Length: 79
Image: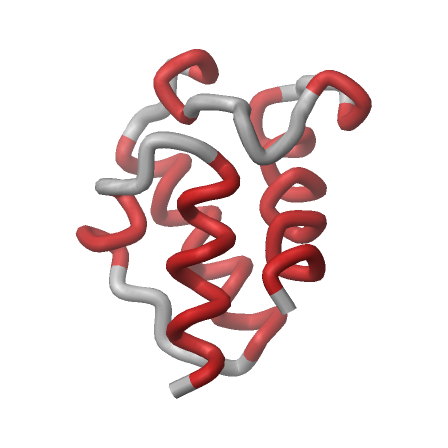
């Protein structure tokens, strides 16, 4: 499940920030993307729609890397 979530995060991040998918991975830091609150909001809304689960914005925003975010969302989906 984690890999599926990570793939979706990378897919959405490439669209939000206009980054090449091949340059993004689990170690990519959100800070390197210069994220704004609206970006996190777009990401959590996208993930909620994709996985039909609530993804708390404030907790998601605390994740430093795409990999941490994938772990967090995968845990939510396992509950």
